[in-house]
Image (cartoon, rainbow, N blue to C red; front, side, top):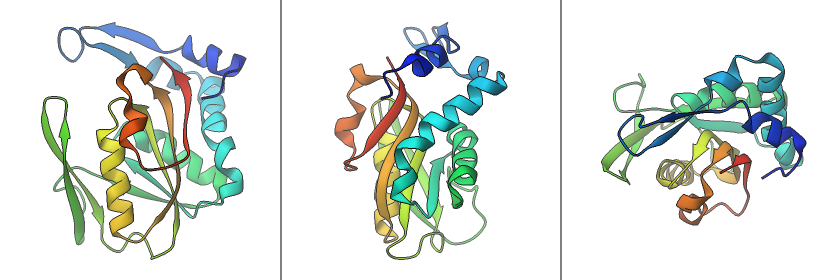
Length: 177
């Protein structure tokens, strides 16, 4: 995590929504950050900086809020972007993985031809909570022969210990709660 004034300023723009999507949950609403052009640009900068020297060739992100950051990071790093989506959303042959959530399970898909063996990959998402989605994405990348250079998140809920679910040695978050 970046422990500097930029992260602190960005954190001030994230709005807490009580009891969403269900009672007892405090939802971190990033739309208040996204609508501020300077803040959005700063968030992309802080998510990109730690991985410039790693030279990722592909940015991989899970729908939908991960896409917001991933495409901008891919543009800044001059590399491609590959979406990981829910079932039925990708038109060609896919590889899938089922994974457990706090309440139930889910499934992710990636096109089988999206990653060449040995491709350097950076995984991007807006939020790291329990780590289930990011860990499932890591598994998909590895199945296709990708080499994970790291995982980056705008927000990390560190009290949920999501980093422990990840195999990547480099995990970076901009805002930490």
